[in-house]
Length: 57
Image (cartoon, rainbow, N blue to C red; front, side, top):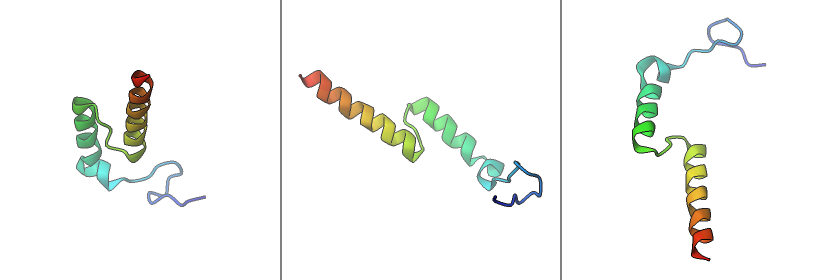
């Protein structure tokens, strides 16, 4: 089990959330419709490619 930096189980400190990077990325993603995470982007591109293949037939 990983030790929390705050000493409270289940509570961890995130410097990205503290300075607002997470919120900024979330706002950009919602406005553009393009995910900022690797998994989200891969899902969106995969869906796009599958739709291209299906619509060509």
